[in-house]
Image 1 (tube, rainbow, N blue to C red):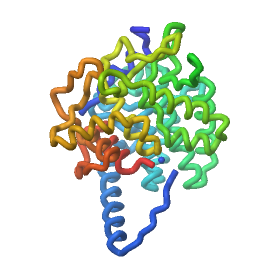
Image 2 (image 1 turned 120 degrees about the vertical axis):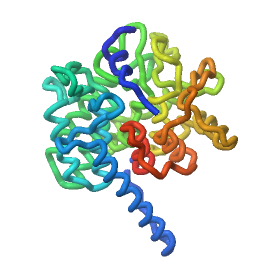
Image 3 (image 1 turned 180 degrees about the vertical axis):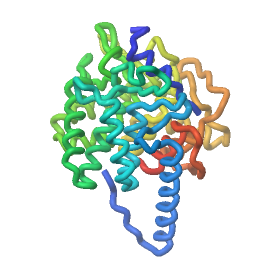
Length: 345
């Protein structure tokens, strides 16, 4: 499958350096801390919005030539619901539907590049972007009583379940996109596309019978898809026709810029066991005081010559309970990881 537009085109975009729970305030001191945290979160959101959200409703990836993608739109929409910012949400939802929504199916083209004559040249989708958009729309529908958002979310969920979930060697597998990820020889999987909080929300909306096979098999799949001496996940892995798991043969064998979201989503989605080996590896660095490398080749042990970004360290902090950076990164992806680490539910 080397050369497929699905697998290869998406990873050309470089990666640089969930249900609400009730909060019980027990003391005046706790109230002060809670208010301080809320103020800090609001400040982060206003900075994020100013830095990355255009007035038209487009979230820009400033590390990649100010492109936008369904993922960035989904993240922006989700964060807008968390921060109760309907004005921003409405503009994001409008631009996303008008610009990225495919005419043939309720999924979204994965990339918008303003530098190109045709900014949406590739109609292929990115499943995590569609999941984020559907989840955010369902939250907005409930939060602000907007039936149209509920209808749009439902259509996307149905498209994901009917077109992007396949059976391979007895497992229900979530495809990263419609095209380029599955053939007779193998299925390619991105483990960071399993956004557990979104899948749980889908199950609550559509019924356990619809989504439980995807969730349960996904937990088992990610628990099994650990490689190398440290048993770490990788950005991309494959399942062959016999069901054997291995790092994708046409990708670097790295726990890196994609897979760093695996422990973040696992922590938010109350399934940290799927990332327990990452937690153990990160803790060895935290205990030694050494900087955590931005990536590691899980087979050779080679590590990046540079440390995790602020976003990466925020994911570490959310996962193992260490301090998170107190300033929002200038880079879109790093800043988004910071926002998710602080806000994701």
